[in-house]
Structures are given as C-alpha cells and as structure tokens.
Image (cartoon, rainbow over all chains, first blue to last red; front, side, top):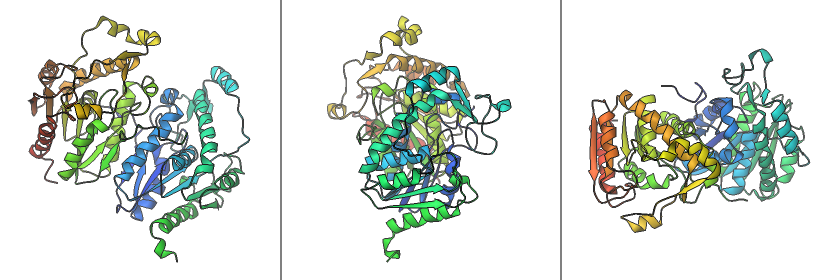
Length: 260
Length: 255
C-alpha cells in the first residue's frame, strides 16, 4: 500500500483556461514541490501548470543510481506532450538542472517561451570524468547536511528544503553530458527566453547569467537579476520580482495586444 | 543532436474532459501509441484521458534494460498524481504489462476501477527464467516471435522496440509475483478482456486472474478476432465500448 513518491513531493497538474500551459522542472536532487509556489502563482493567472517529477527524484536517493540524463530529457518531453493536450501555448520553466533541461528542450521543440532560473553555465568548465569516477569509489555518497543525519536511504528530505539530504556521487556524471548538450543547444534556440539569477546565489558561477545571455543569439531574450535571492529562487523570500517577471513574460507572448 | 528522444507518434497523450479520468498504460516494449485510439474513444465520450509512457519505453531499446519494475509502477504513480489535480475519480486501463500494473495499482492506490486487457497471470514456463539476470549479462535481448496481427495495417503502423531485453523479462517476472500477491487485495470493480486468438499471452491467463480475484465486482469479456494488442486489432471497438460501459455501470458517468 506504500507509494514510492515522498509525501508532499508528488508531481501535480493544475488545470487552467486552455490558453497557456507551463511545464515546471525542479533541480538536481530537488523535488516537484520546489516548483509548487510558482505553479500556484501561474495557476492563479489562469495558466495550466504541470510540476513534473524527474526520474530518480522524490523517492529514494538510491533510485538516482540507475538514472541517466536521457531519462531526465525524456521526462521533459513527456511533460510537453501532456501540456500540448491541455493548452494552446506551451512554456517550459526550470530551475538549475531543470533550467538546463528547459533550454535544451527549447532547442528541440517549438515552444512559446522558455524561462531558466539559476542555471549554471560556464563554457570553460572542465571536470575529469575519470577523477569523478575515482571519487565516487572513495566516497559513494555526497552528503548535503550534517553527518549525524546523513543516512541516504533513511533520510527523506532536507530539513528546510524539498530535496534529498544526500545523493550518489556517481550521478554527478550524468550532468556532464547535459552541460555539453546545453552548450550545443544555446546557439540554436529560437524560442523567446527569460533568464533569471539571484544576486545572492552562491551555488553557481556568478557569471552564468551573462554567459547564457550572450550565448542565446538567435532569439529575443531578457535577463533579470533577482535582488537578494539565493539559488533556489522559487522558495526564496525574495522571489516575488522573479514570479512577476515570468508572468509578464508569458502575457507578452500570449496577449501581445496588451503590450502596445 | 536536436531531435526529441521519444519516437515520433509514440508520445504520451492527454485529453482534458469531465471529472472521470482514465489512465491508460501500454505494454512491455510498447509505447503510448498502442493506447491512443482507446484514449481518443474515451475522450469522445467526455472523459479525461492520460496515456502515460512507462520508464525506459518509446525512446531507445538501450534505455529499457536499466529499469526496474518499481520504475514502471512509479510512472503509473506519477500519472495518478497528475490526474488527482483534474478529476474526482480515476480508472486505470492497461494492456499486457500495462494490465499487470493496472491490477497492482488497484491494490495500492485509491481507484474507481480497473480494465486489464491481454494480461498475463504468469510467464510461460521456461527453465531459463530463473537465471534471466545472469543470462542478461551475456545475452542482452531475445527476439520477438513472428507478427500475428489480424489487422495488418495497424501492425505495420505499430511503434515498439524490435526485441525484448532479457533484463526486462526478469523484472517482468518479479512484477508478476507482486501482482499475484496483490490480486486478493483488490476491492474495486475489475473488467478483464482477452482474445481467444492471443498467441503471445494465452487465453487461460485471464481465467487464472479471474479466479484469483476476490473483489465483489469482477467480469470477463472474450473477443475472438484479435491477436495480443487488442486495442489496435479488429475487435478494438468492442473493447473500447466495453470499457466505456464498465465506467457507466460502475458509477463513473454521474460526475
């Protein structure tokens, strides 16, 4: 009788008026409810909102071991296909890893818009695959919280964030091919893009936002520094300017007559 | 590589409708496409329909062998969670392995009813089955039998993987153990549908599932002129109509 998904972390579909549909993609080791505040905000504007669950997430950290980046890309494709049945215009919105996936999707699908929050992007970044495999042998689990509560299977969530408290080191290897896919995708994106990053984000390279902005050359793009927000913008106390910017971004595309 | 990973025409599908939702589940190595006609039929009757893609399916055959049966059931769980936001009651309808997952879901989650089509009770006896995970290390796939479609046009247009991954068969066998244990725990209406001409999953499987069910409302429907994929075969309209009648009879139409 047990469910696999952690209680409260289930994927959600909030039906809207059929005009705009928003796919919301959470970050690495995070859970669908990371995006729920934004989904509720968009739903209140009449938009259909779908918070998907990336494979390996929101169940048990060990489930990440057999997941590859292909499964994450395919989960986004599932979400787009589902939203196409519910809305005329499809927007894909992701945070961190979810933002990488959103931008890659924007290079493969005809979308109405893409919003990427807190996406790490450093074109010069190199990490040795071999070294990471070695580290994964020596330290199979990366613990995000204090060691006294770091059992990766027993622990369900971080105390103050909807995310795993620990995750398999080897899964970091799956982010590498996505970095490459992202770098390949950016110059080909023709979907209007909104890029956001918190001024207090200590997790990703600070120049990520500017790097992404300059790599997106084939489309109309905007960027916004979210004042005082950290990496997880959707749950940050300073998120409101980001939510407002996303709402306006969608409106400008679905109701251009309102913006002479 | 700027191509989608999901095989064209094999994407999952969603049709918004009334407060009665149908979650449709395809079979092992199959794709959402084999459930799409059924989904369109139920949507025309006004119901909300979600045709999910099971983990590892409808992309590349290499994606399937690393999946465990729990990943497939988690795909079902995701679908049920999405439907919670748009409908008051949910029926689950599955073909073959999708039927196994439907029955297992009925024992684990609150559902309004189940339609299980062409569903196996057990895999055919084979001494290699016990060692399938070992065999999978040296033999990755096992060939599918020759096609026996009664509707050759639907067969030509079918989307699936060309072979069975041996590792997946081991998972399928474990999933069947779970299903057989779950059958007596099902308390919701169940409709079983099978073709007497099914040469992939022999007709006796339906009778064995029926016998193991203890739910108050269980029924069987035989069709004659179809092979395994009855949702795309000549009897499909009969199958779709039976599923719709089942919803109406079990209270799903008074939304």
